[in-house]
Length: 113
Image (cartoon, rainbow, N blue to C red; front, side):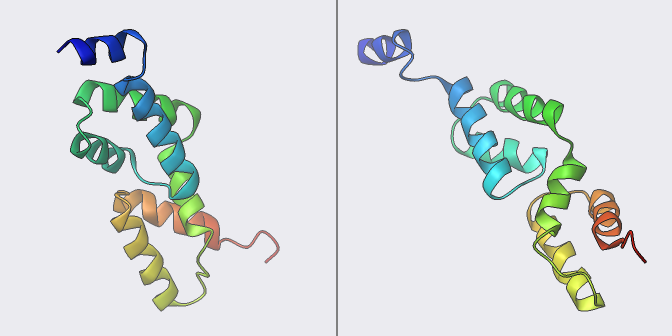
């Protein structure tokens, strides 16, 4: 009751700030699709509207395609096995299959050749 109210008043508890920091950290360290980020925040007790706002703010600065591309940068995409491994990683990070395929085409393209 009163203790929580004081913490909120002093902005020591701020779900919006927590959600923004969480989304920013995840997008730097281990990029994920927006829908997965929202789900992760919900599991952590953040209200859905707050979680959606934090993800929307992230996606104003970057696209899901860019986030997927950042995941793919760690993969060699020379063989079919490499592409399947990369596709599984993207799926585990919540990316839509169409975004994953577009991202693989971009990363695999060789501008010189």
